Image 1 (cartoon, rainbow over the protein chains, first blue to last red):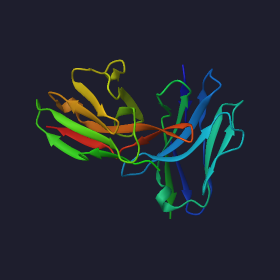
Image 2 (cartoon, rainbow over the protein chains, first blue to last red):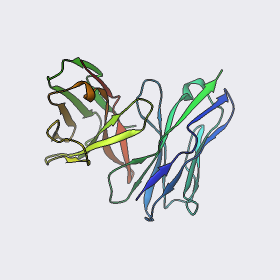
Image 3 (cartoon, one colour):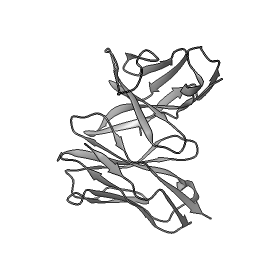
Image 4 (cartoon, chains in turn red, blue):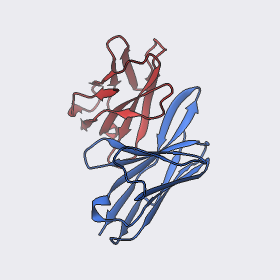
Length: 114
Length: 117
């Protein structure tokens, strides 16, 4: 069975600081995609970043970057220069080739403190 | 990025009535869409997978006769909550599957808050 674990239910950091959200997953497959979605108070799910498992290079999107450790099955999200608008629930998610269903973690509630 | 709309964003209905929620992919074609339910402070729970031109596939424990799904075109899927009851009150979110540069990605609608009185 595929599972995604987010061990930090809540986190808070000061504005402009860097924060890292952790995510581990379990799968026996070799080909898959990993995602981070954010859900702000509006509840709109927004894609933050995605990573293909076959790529060794860590994905980066502006202030957001990941640390993908395939052997350790770890997929952490780093937010640099955090902004108030980054306050949201962050979900790590996983899908493997040939299976269209996303598996979500339980989420990490991130609060950016002014 | 790809845009998915959902309508209505908020609906209140009386117990026993039916409610239809629409999910549209605005700038891409989606052969597959998904319907989720989200309880307060929880993750998303997949209800069903909607495939264009075929019957939806429901997750275990989801009543297919209560939650009717129709995927009539490559840009539209609908979820109808039939004979709604207060326990059906929830936040319903749809997503549409898109291939972007060979990466399989789901894009989400803004959600529909359903309140059944």
